[in-house]
Amino acid sequence: MPLPELPLDVYTQIFSQLPVSAANDGSISLARCSQANSLLREAACQSTLWDVHYRARYRHPAQAFSDSEGQDLPEDARLRYISRRRLDCTALHLLERIVSCVGDRCNTMKELVALSFDVWDALEIERTQPLPVMFQQPGQDLNTLVAPHAFPRRYWAGVALDLIAKSYATRLWRRLGEDPAAVSFEDAMAALSCFCGKSPLEMQSMFDDLASRCRAKLQADGCELNTADAACDVARICTGICDFMRSEGFGPADGTDFRRVHHHFAHFYLTTHRQTIPLSLVHVFVAIGTRLGLQASPVDFPYRVIAHVSHPSPTVDDIFVDVFGSDTRAILDPREDVARRCIAVGVHPDEIPQFIAPRRATPLILRSARNIVSSEFEDTVSPRSLIRTAVHVTKCVVTLVSEQMVDPTGFLLGTDTIQFDCATYISGIIAPALPAPRNRHLALMCDHRIRTARDEDSVVTMRTSSDRTVLYFVGMIFQHARYNYTGVIIGWNSTCDATESWIQQMGVDQLPRGRHQPFYNIYDVFGQQRYVAEDNIAVNADPHPSIQALIDQVPSLGMYFEDADIGEDEEGQTKARLLLSPEYQKKYPEDGHFGNAWMAD
Image 1 (cartoon, rainbow, N blue to C red):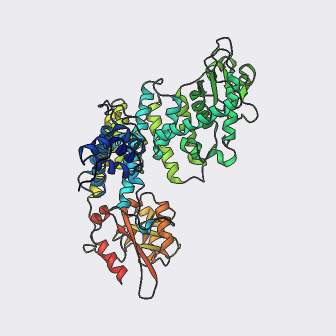
Image 2: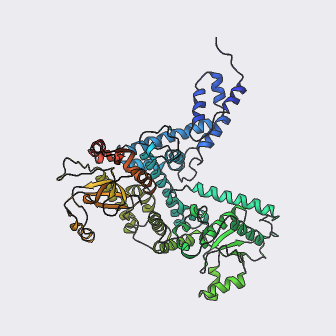
Image 3: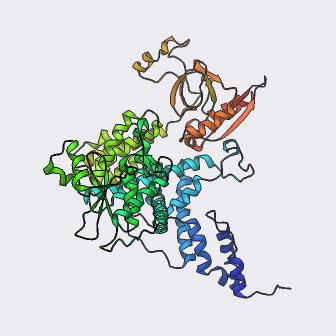
């Protein structure tokens, strides 16, 4: 006997209780219900039910940051969700091709990155999927279902997200170079964080949250925010913003911390490095002030960057704010304080007006680039990977924004520049912005880098064809016999493949077997890549903490490996290896079997 049907509004109420998350659990159930009978279909297809699932999965509006013109998404939330999910499926198919090394990876990555922020949320979900048990942090659910090749998928999803963010940033700075009025100071500065894989929406959200809480605090203190009124107390609002920032932990960095490279990236000085430099504090002040209705701008002041706020009344002086020194005095007198500071650093009185004028983004983003160059040599604390990223950002900014002509080829294409950088934003965005013949030269060098990487990726290294016995294998966790650090092998040569100068500098010929023995490319647990002789390789007796340290310190580990295996030898000594990713199974097809035998021995 069939069950009686319930009224439509009852089904609607039931469906509204389905779980809402980015993981799609509730939306999948809703989709299945829409394939049932006509009454369930009518209930499950209601746009209001789908809207919450859409907003839970998609934080980035479709084409929110894209310059391309595309079809508008349907107004109906269900159809909008379906349209975005189709794009997600396209992105995940491309990601699978990259992970599995199918076809031309550079062109596949280029196609994936071209989908831009429309697929950012889907790739972000991939980057947070569960890892195999051996890679999980303590306390995680060991029964979680793990997708095939989860670790490589995480890595390559992260690479795609980085390239999408870099493409957005370079496109933004390209517009800035073409039209200084086209890009705001806030956006130009926040885009620096895109080279650390951050979405611009993340920066915007943090600024929005700060401004919302600042507004609430000012209103609670009785401060009127009628910023369009000629009688508005702009100075009080500016002082209130500075007070709010200090209450939130923003303030001046000092000592050796002043030169930390973190101070140039908004995602750091909005979170962990709020004690920061003048330019970054002004960036935060301008972002908050603009949201409160102030006409706030930076001033490229020679002493230190300050903020300029226009007063709505033409008869009242504009406001100059020293955000960095606001704990002693926030508001500067333009005739006394500002002029005195200019003269103190050698500015002629007749030139003062040009130094205190509100500025657009261009001179400030270039000033940030100069500061980064200084930090490169003076910052001895920050991770070298972050410093390298910061230097590459500087090169992109200078190439796109500066009026000074530079040869971008050797400037941009450093040793850390991967082929996917060349295939996406360097050849597709930076090169076309340059005048001839620099544009053609850069494009040709990018093509050369891509072809070289493609040739290297096609090399297959066989143990059985080596002219000497290779004792160890890709994936082995080892301990350096002389220096005692732990690492993992990521490649090998049957003999030393380094330059003669390196061989002499490292004393290779003083080793028992000299240069005529296998050498191994390795990553140590500190994230450093090294080249180690077989004489110096020993089995690691305590590999458990080493695996987690490698995951934490080697961001590219997922390119090489996908899981781990730990066992014991006949004497009860622990030994471990990392299992090869699909890419490295193809590059070293015999090492997996050799590793199996070594573990079973």
